[in-house]
Amino acid sequence: MELISRTEKHKVEKRKVTDVSWLLGILLFGCLAYPISSFVQIPDDLAYKQTMQILLFMTSLLFLILYLLAFIVASTKTFVQIEHKVIRVNYMIMSFWVLSLLYHFTGWLMSYASWSPLYYKLGVAFTLTVLILTLLHFAAYFSFTRSDRIARSRKQALEYRQQAFESIQRILHTRQIMLEVMDSNPEVLQMMKWNGFDRQMESWVAEMERFMNMTSFTDQELRNILGVKAWMENLMLIVEQHPMHRGLRKKLN
Image (cartoon, rainbow, N blue to C red; front, side):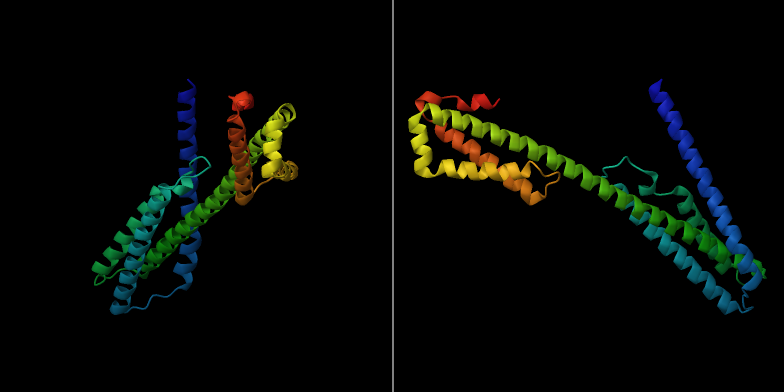
């Protein structure tokens, strides 16, 4: 039942988006058609009309190709956010570009006929309408990708923070185990002091305590923390070679 309700909800939302797109297209066409038909003059020259139609035809073809290529490539990308309609080809816009192609191609072929100037004016208005719809779709896509980059950045920051704090806790826990071993075994204590491992360990721990007060981490800071974690684990491996401390790393689990 839940799957059916989700499917129905998706269909309703898709239908609403389609209705809004059609209404926006009709509104834009009406806003452009009236001033163009009222104030734009089309010269009664055959060569001019043919040139205008072929230019509009080539423009429609170019934008159709660019539109399809752009959103076919965009649809192959992965996004942090849920897939959105703006990253897919809008079939209404694609159909409008095809209609624009056919409209101007017909006007070019039939330019010898006595077409009314209104035919050419409406063709210009229609092509401009489709162009504006296309630009609006691109604007919506770029807005979506910008918000997706922000979401991706926040997600990465959260992952860095979680990984950093888990690593710091493991470092501090490892240090506590090492201190207990040093207190209980003079040989380990001597080895640590002789090689300067005790001073280095305390230096790293002091650095980790500074990180504990941070709320965000850069990629370099996370690498530094992971490097200290690896150093502490290697130190424990060295101490684990002592016969009295076999299986020392099990205390970390």
